[in-house]
Structure formats: structure tokens, C-alpha cells
Length: 116
Image 1: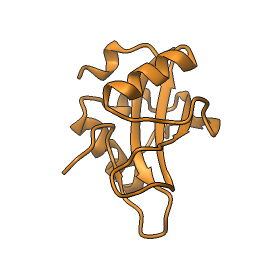
Image 2: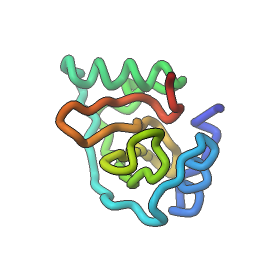
Image 3: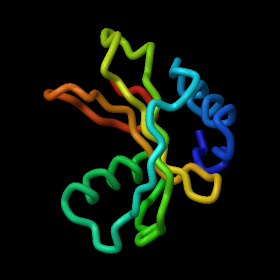
């Protein structure tokens, strides 16, 4: 799936995008916030960007930019009925990054596609 081909300008378009990966999410984001992609990446951002590169994206192109992060609750993660979120980073209506993660202490994080 070519992620950058999708528009994320409206909630409806973001939901359609997530459906293409098979995610059943809450109809509205549980959080919308502004994030600044750092100019210089630390270890945490390097690791996060490795996840992005694996799915054909690269946050380095957006270093120093303000982006919006939309977070949705995932309802259909295998064997995990709760505490799973999908984050989508959006710049000028385009998806530039994101992840699926567990918000539990022993959590995990991967790209939009279910691995395993």
C-alpha cells in the first residue's frame, strides 16, 4: 500500500485509510495534538523513523515542521481487546508517518500493517 497516496484531510478519509489495513477504530480520534518533528533526531526518533522507513515513509523530510497527530482507539487487534491505539502523523493533509501501539507498560509498536 502506498501510504503517501492517501489523503488525510478529513476524519472520513483517515478512517478509510485505516480500514485498508483492516483496522476497526473508534469513529472519532481520542486525541488530536500538534507535534514538532525535531530537527535533530535522538535515539527515540531514530527508532521511530526506522518504523516509518519500513513502511515507505521518512520523517527526516519533515524535520522542524509542525504536524498533527491523530490517535484512534483500535477495537479489533488480535488477542488485545483494549489499550491499543493507532497514531497518524499528518502534514498538509498527507499521511507522513504513524504507528500501531499498545499503551500498556509492556507495550509494543509497529507500522500500520499488522505484523506476524
